[in-house]
Length: 279
Image (cartoon, rainbow, N blue to C red; front, side, top):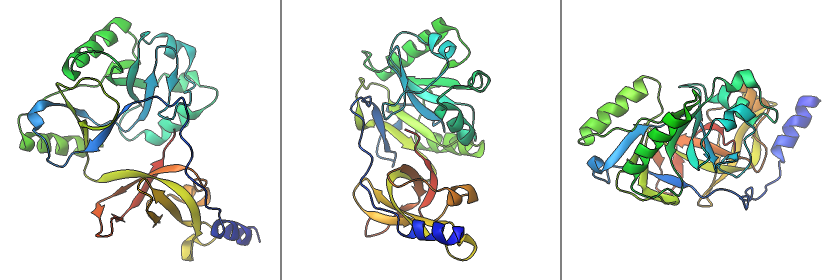
């Protein structure tokens, strides 16, 4: 009976609009996708870390949404009293464990000792990105705490060198690369001054419903019905663990999915669930 009721609830899940953006959400720079459209020699390159983005305004650490990250007082006290933008990170392949740590209302000191704040930008700072990268290194050096690090920036001479570095990172368990135009002033919004390069595409969508599972997934969630940023709706049925199928993301949640390319109608091809967006 319980399984039947759960199936009915999943089948008739309400369709709700996307979660509204908080008024205090910080303005940040968002990456476009790298598609061989730029001269890579004009960019500084770094590894794309599979972490949780954290924006520090000198007093409060926040998710992209503006919601406060409840880090321990000692962690925050060690940060410079100036704006920082970076990734909370614990190493390659640790995203799920990290996400549990940074979402806790009451932070666990022992767990947070494993977290690093990897800085890649100085919001609002003057100068080019290359100059800000130097300022980041100096700020990290002056802070002199083990949980504050800069993300290494390097240059490549051409696209072949970039592809070679990409293969090395992915083979080692990394997610991809980020390219930041070296002469770019600080800006916010989506821009090709910042590009992401991955072996697959990814995007975000809002959960608008649940579809019941069949066969071995009977009594669980079979697929998420989602609405993409452009308003298109489709079903996302792959990439779920049994735990996620048993306790699927609620309607209104923003999820990240990966895909290979787009169909002629503009829908993602071979779309697969990646994770719930924390913020």
